[in-house]
Length: 347
Length: 244
Image (cartoon, rainbow over all chains, first blue to last red; front, side, top):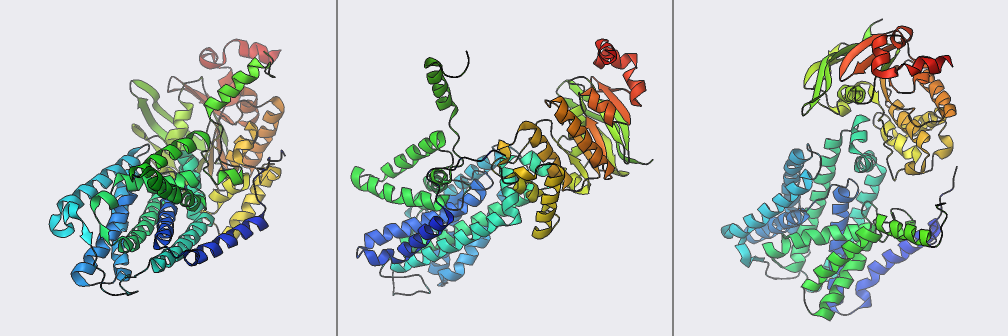
């Protein structure tokens, strides 16, 4: 049996546990380290995008079914929360369930239709759904105020209504959600559906011919992913206090969500969180230095290209030593170099 | 003996090409039936039609007397029709153990699945590779891993699609012994193969396809000496080579 070459950066189990513990302690102490509400708001954005990345990773990472409509599930959660609160005074803690219910039904419908077909049809269906949702939100002016968007007015500090003077409370709520989502993702990895999803990702025909009900498993993963995304959408909307179709139901947001997982390491437990940890502060830095909110998207696009070409396993693969196939182009170049130097090709 | 699997007037076309053209034959319970023929004769298409990967244009597939033509691919596997693929399809990224365990856990508890996966890997001589990533296995071991994954589904009929292609003579002998062991455990085998040495050693009956049609069928001796089979598939040099 040939031994696998360990990555020089691969930490031992004890180191891993130590790093993880130190990171969790750091996350809990983070708001105490700065008096600036802006810094804490970056922490809130990190937790939000880490949660969204973990959610997307369930269908996009574990099953490799690329979804472009996760911004729509954020929008469903956000708008349901705002509308129920503004019209009926219902607490977002309750409307979270309404939003997740609607998202689950939407995911069930999209998945039922598109998962029956192989190839790019699922991705195309999600693009279509995202556009339908954005246009619908834009033109339902009586309900959503169209492009003007919806606002939540701060009345008084209230945990029930998710109204806080400082962002610390949102940070801790989303941090607890992130830990919960990581736990769900970890449990999924170790459960039957988790194993089936990884088999489907590699070879759907083989998985199906070995008895795995691929359609049902993908549908389960998509609904779970949509429900988790929608729940974050409701909480994040109350943090923002203002939502409109252009910001909350856009292709930009959908791309950002997927990028977190891809850059960090799609199909891995820590990948989406690592992606958010790298991208959210970088994006803020780019906005500050380049003075435009579009620079963040430029950064996402550039990093996505770099990862796809050079490190398909994402950042986490640097530490695990997997998922990092050398691209064909580099192999060719390397081959040419060897040939020039009289390599061992025997030619 | 009763037929466990029956193809009735099965048809499949790809555009204007009739890959399988009104083919009918039966597989008796407990036998190893060889399905042979030149490249492009429709052997793998037959396997894909039996396992449900392709939808038939016409005809029927009966498993234990019941039509499975409308049953899903996964449904057929769960009923007891197992198959391997011409090119091995390892679950890249998963270890050898995990790829068998993934399939084993479908109908068993985690503990049972773990136990049976270990046992099957031992039977297939893959125990020492348990922790290795599937994609790092040598080609012949990948074929055995494919077979190990199918065997944990407890198939009653096993469709082996060219499992011996690319193997050296020693590996072929080992594979022949393995297929025989599998058959002796009560699993009926449909054996698609070009390696005639293995076909003759293993099969009790042969079915020959040519141009998507059934050319002939019968016991190996009769079929191998059939002038139609020699002309369409084996070639005149085959018997000279055998005699040498």
